[in-house]
Length: 264
Image 1 (tube, rainbow, N blue to C red):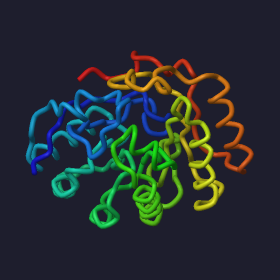
Image 2: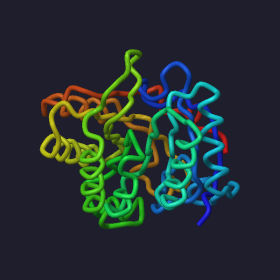
Image 3: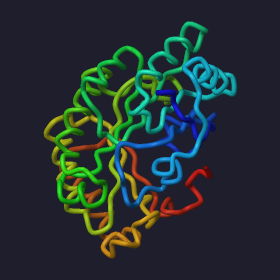
């Protein structure tokens, strides 16, 4: 299946070690293997707007982003196009592309598919969205999210290990785990952090996100039809530090704004 691309841009709003000063060369893929009711990118994930490209065309996009000064190639929601992406990466490398690839995923990944990416992807940027299976079923349409995600993230860590940075602080290899705190689900966030603390070295990098705003179909669920409270966010941060985790990124609560959502 040919990849469908909805947007290509230099993205300045990722983690500082990814966006840097020049931006992350971001390719947004259409479609998704989850059905999150609060998806900020629902126009591409659910409505699948965009244009198809073949692997050679995708490689040309990668090279164009590099020529614009991108620190990396950021593959957003790439899961369902892995085979074509691997081919495009090989073509781009053969044509001289030097910068790292970032695999930016919702975490609901097959380990067998991820093994196809070994040696191709330098940086993995997965979400761990949920611990609770009732929540993952209700809000994203799958009850086995955590069981799949935990194995996938461990495979990513096996492949690339802890983050390594260049002299300017830009990541060149490694795993960064993301977690978006959802309103009314801060207890679930604590469980996610417990898993990270138990499974990975304490030095693991975690990006704790406060950017949630009610979007798409979130208004159908009263408990998530609001922004986070300061109490919810502070509770998760305090628990993060209490577990002995110290590395990562925290967002200002002002990041919960439509201004940071790309137009598709």
